[in-house]
Length: 82
Picture 1 (spheres, rainbow, N blue to C red):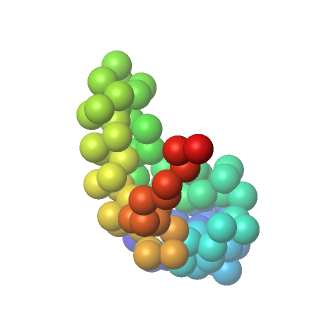
Picture 2: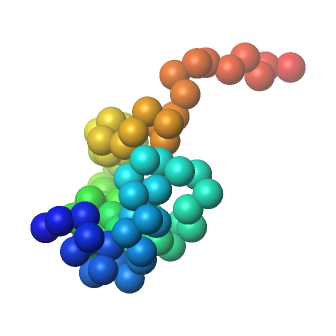
């Protein structure tokens, strides 16, 4: 499926679909979830199937590795023990 076809199936413009691909944080969550669904990226699948939280976090890390660097969690550990 082309990106234009995926955007059409998700009900978003090709420009918005491109921004989602790039990890633009200004895209709406609904559009991102719809795009993920259309292209077959299961979000929160472990939680829906009754998996453990640990398994869900491991799956989340795998999914995050598929995202562009700008959309990934920071690896910097924050010291917030006041």
